[in-house]
Length: 153
Image (cartoon, rainbow, N blue to C red):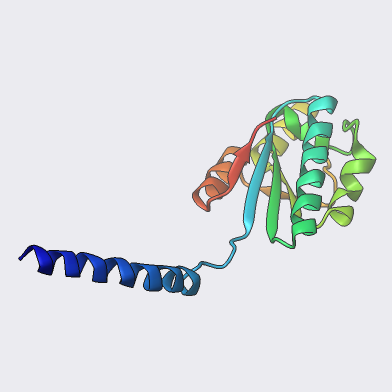
């Protein structure tokens, strides 16, 4: 009886030496797309400059490695000032950013736009390369549900 158990154990070990590397190689999942969301809720030129620098650095890193990625910057509350054409201290860089850095989306909170417009007594304008989403927090939740890694500088 001990010889039978020993034989079965040796046979199982031999099978694992052959089968596991083959199965691991055949079943290796393809590399998934890196998904990152950066939230901006502060009216700070320094913080937003870091956000743009981080997005640019990540883009360069993934491109050099030949890996797919998606980066979304979501601005809401006071952070929306970074996307406003009348108050952004980094206006020129923001306007050109999505052209020079691929696979980056800039989203502006529609609720914040409505609130700022009401307070200003007129419609406020945001940079044309930003898209308006209904709510910044809601967008962050949606992206989190889709597996995005969230960064708050």
